[in-house]
Amino acid sequence: MRELLSIIVAGLGAGLYPNEKAVSTSIVVPILRNLGWDDADPFEVRPEYQSGKGRVDFALFGASHQPGVFVEVKAVGKAAAADVQLFEYAFHEGAQIAVLTDGRVWSFYVPAQPGSFEDRKVHQLDLLERSIADAEDRFVRYLQKVRVARGLALQDAQSDYQSKASQRIAAETIPRAWAELLAEGDILYKLLRDRTEALCGHVPSEGALQAFVSTLNGGQAPVPPPRPGPPAVPPAVPPAVPPRNRNGTGTPRPGPISWSVLGRQVSANTQNEALAGFLNELFQRFPERVHRIIASVGTRSRAHIADTPEAIYPKRPDLGMKNHIKVSTGHYLGTNVSRDGKIKIARKAAAACSLNWGTDAVLEI
Image 1 (tube, helix red, strand yellow):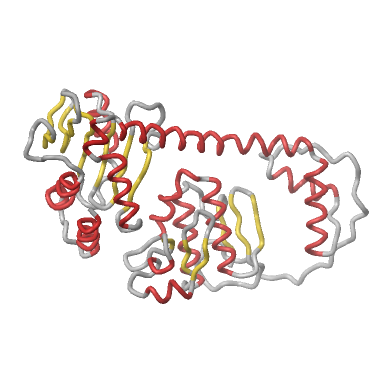
Image 2 (cartoon, helix red, strand yellow):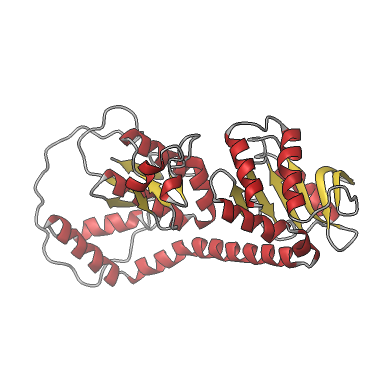
């Protein structure tokens, strides 16, 4: 399998699969064969499978006369809008697992579970972004014939769905937990007041603390702390500077290095530290979109975020070894990037999370 996947990855990189037929013939069918499926046996694999709701490219039959897996194939880069079509087939026929692929990106779904199409996607595998070993593990986990026939593939897919759903519920509960912390007030205000004083040498007024915390509480007035803090010391007025450009274009102006996501603003010492902090915040807030973020920031020649330092810049692995930061997901972020390049990475990552650049998400470097 690994040798086959290496050949496919090289072909994808060279643009050797120009249309849907090439993807089916040279990528999908060889992978299915390697996983134990006999594409010459219509009792196992039926191409152009016709159902009451339409046609699907491949239906895989495990131990029963009902299709266990549907595979819908699109040309490279053309799979984004095919979810609805695939799900109509899968629901009508009762397929346990549905797969949508353009040869490069493979999306695995459990159609019978509740939620949106994205909710029911248990894994997305990008062959140009992930290691050969990881790709092999995922294909075996969801598509190996013996595992499909024994129901093990469905069990693992359902388990992955439940894990993803749990993470989604936890992420959705964070605002409620934050609101309860705000309501408690005392400890939060003390920590914020002390850290502000440590950073600038001045104690913020209670009004300033309340005004800031209200921005984290949906604009609602927070519960005031039970005791007033020390008298505020008037801060020195800093010299006026022109406003900095938040859109990532034009000449950078003087100002502090920082990043902000959904109202949480954090200062940083360096541009690399700011970009890494920005990405870590997105990974923590949107755990279900980690792979989408990683895929969105890459280019044809650079991954920017990869499993290993060497894979960051495939044509120059030495650059990745010398210039990288490890982020919270365990991946490696390449730092051999210009200021404008860092902002482009941040903007693409924000877009992958459906955040508005300049308001919901900002990188100031």
